Length: 345
Image (tube, rainbow, N blue to C red; front, side):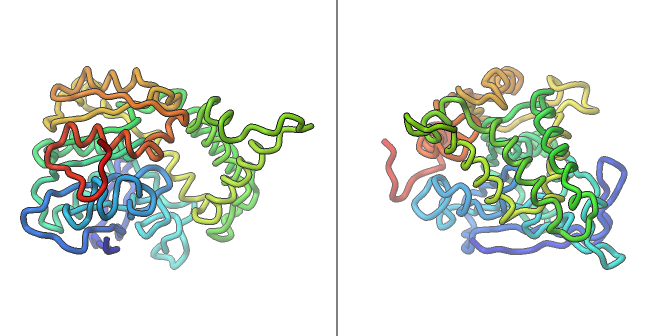
């Protein structure tokens, strides 16, 4: 896939009333686009980039269900992130990085920004839009805002509105960021690394499960103190710090909190009633961040929808880890998808 950039030179108005003076979007798109190829729009989750071949490699790539040589695949880095789109690391008109002054963006803002790119590319319909977690928020919002554009939609491990439980995790992570004095000083984009590591450790507990930690992080029988789970949390915190910044993480936590499909639409039921796309809803039986009953609600309120469940020892992160199960379900429900070299049957 090819990495590209799109610039919207007019001020981009946000739901908050603030604006981004020059909106820039980084995106990846299939190198070869044949006229008859299906358009598959992949929406990434919280800290991913716009190249699904890197973070969803069990689904995207040569011979996989999302094959760039067979389909026109597009993925856009969300505004507020640090992978090429406008965000806290961008430079303001004053010649300084925004850091905490970058405006908060909502899921609705993200989708409206991405739609500018769709229009620029001359794409009149999206054959399949898909996302897991925060990517699912975007895919759902796409289906509500542009029901005549989105033909098919796959929602994985997401819901119609951020839950109090999810918002509480987000606020706990923000508290961790704010406890780092280097984050509040805003001296450089590298501020807040210790707070970011702590925030990631908090988040990971919501992504995984008791059983999963018991399988992968269990200490030896005669250990005096628990070590493996502790070192794993430290490792995951450092791993994110090596590739992400605390200011983007802070802004994107509010993006998650903004998720409410029913806002200014008369409620969730009316909003989901606007979806015209053939919709596949996939839930994960062990997901404690987005419990399966939330996917049942989506299925109940989206008219042309099908509900499937996958089983994973690893909770919410199953949307990234359980590629085989997800592929089987996608192949069953969307006939235009096919595998060239990999067979899960």
